[in-house]
Length: 108
Image (cartoon, rainbow, N blue to C red):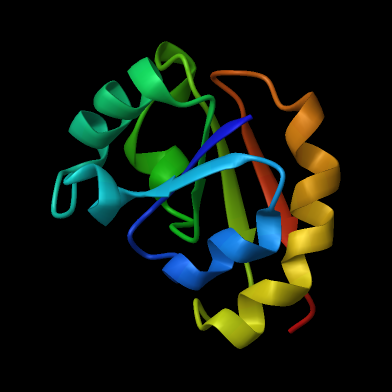
């Protein structure tokens, strides 16, 4: 699966979701883009956007984009708080549908 990590997700998190083609927003040269523009670019090259931005689904009409969005909900976006969510994310990835938002919640 082709996964894009939003710039709010620690780039080192990519190592925790091995077995997938993973790139970060900065690697793509898309840092600083507004969410609508980012989603428009991402849908052309990726199947899933992984973010910690809990407001994304309220700010954008996600069904119009041909990309799935997974929101990691942890105590913070620090790597130590995100890593425990990796197993849940890996389980969720194969079944995600484009245009749909899924949430992966941690403790705390």
